[in-house]
Length: 129
Image: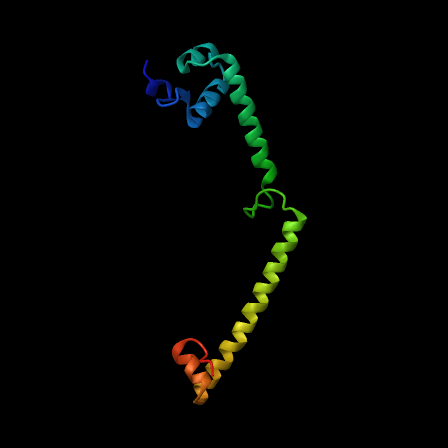
């Protein structure tokens, strides 16, 4: 039996993560002959036990970190949350200022005011005098 048939990575001689999961699922099937499955994969029972433990840890971790189905994962550190909240506030404030400036520029453009506002609208930036 070749490496590919056993689901092994040729370069390392180990089972890939996908094949480890397939081994796990196959051994969990009702009436599965675990000994035969292990021989087919070329692994020992202790390897299967480590795979089972890893699957359990990963499953529990994945279920713990989801919150309200909103795609967020894991708890957020309070310090990090405060920094993110401050950054959001600064960004919202800057966006509000830009909106006011944009409205004033559009208004001056409609009124036909010459000068710095017109220069800003045509070049995209305010000319320094």
